[in-house]
Image 1 (cartoon, rainbow, N blue to C red):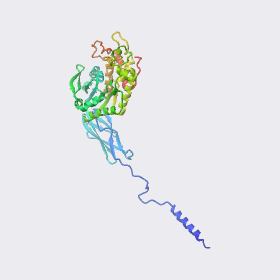
Image 2: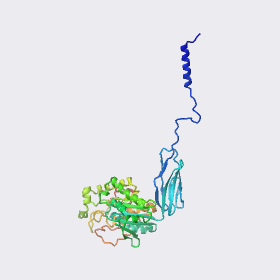
Image 3: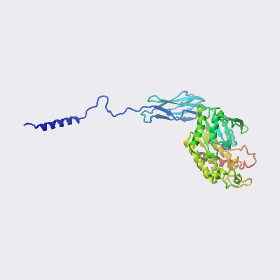
Image 4: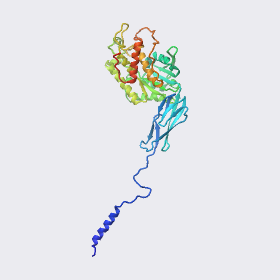
Length: 419
């Protein structure tokens, strides 16, 4: 029987389609044409390109790999001199002895490298840059703490002072190199600072490799409350210029401003000219001024290269909640723990500020705290408008607690009304 020609044609077409649907092996060596080659490391960097460490202390180097999607992110670490600084497999650098070393991070993929220059010091070097509010903290009791705890052989401290200076003026002075800062070094025999004369800020900054630099805004100026790109750039400029003049890189701490005295205190009212800052900017509301200062300090820490805060402003607010801050006295009217409505009382307030500085700076490094048994080096000073509240065994313990609460919680007031 003859098969119709149309039917034969259909069978042929079906056979062709059947063959085309069969899976065929891909060419040898190309099992999956859709697989992309692994992404290679193009570049690596570190969170620090230089740093200054005190002997025995450590810092962590963090590698950043570009692009982030690189498949092999393994890094190896090496120190150029393990007698000076060592580094482990995680990037933790430990200072061994005074000197300089270079830490190199190398990617396993492509052998890309990044380095950090490490300067190790065998004394802990501190530079204070500030105005009269830094002076309140370090002029009196601070040197006594250092002397009593035996730290003077382990540290090297210098103080550049000019009253009323704002951060903008500090930054400009560093660039201009004008000789207008009082340069002070400690005399542990007298427990006083020795003024070495007017000196340019950059000249002192270049004296040694600093482990820590403290900077302070002027508390009675809007620059201590406002925050924008201008204020951020001023701080960054000062930090950058100081760091550029160092082989290593110091840490920086920001000294918090203080809120002015409450006009409810009897003697505050006699300083009407000084109270214009509180009246005109904060409606005589001390708490509003304090919260504004706190918010500014938070911005400094969050948005600049500053590493930490010294919360003297919070210490004073804490102390103001205690029985030490009574409004009346048989001796003198009280001024909310100030001597002139805004500078600290040279007695207990300065003691609390010194405690805050000491334990903010030295406790993390040396595990040393303010000595509990304390003799005021100025105890012979008669009570005056500047020295209204002498330091006693009882109120020293309260002020120290106010300082420690401020260190633990730098941006909030601790109610100490039971003390």
